[in-house]
Length: 123
Image 1 (tube, helix red, strand yellow):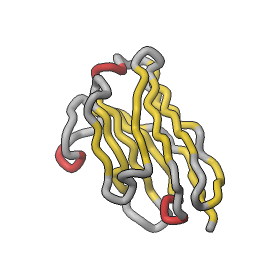
Image 2 (cartoon, helix red, strand yellow):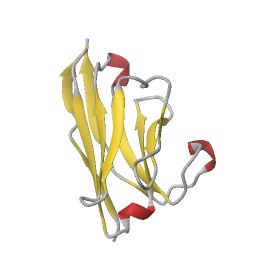
Image 3 (cartoon, rainbow, N blue to C red):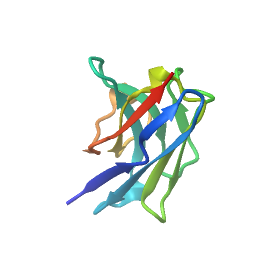
Image 4 (tube, rainbow, N blue to C red):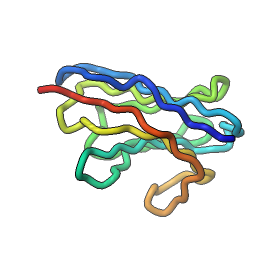
């Protein structure tokens, strides 16, 4: 069955960096736009970043623009999230998600979700 498996989370000090990975299996990865979302305790799930099938188009939440970079390697069926200049407010569980459409995350459906990886940023 289809699996999205995130990795790379951990504990980091404010100002530090982490690189998250999301490895996909049992799906035609290059058919899917890939997104990252995050959810902090007691808060709603929040869109972070998206990348289209080819990797040529990306979009970010205002809160992470200039600090986070989404990329993908279709040969490895993997999407990445490079997170720099991390802040305590970036602390959350980060999930990747696969969608057959690209654009405004509010109007798209998501076919698959990963279980998430915890990112904790200490002040």
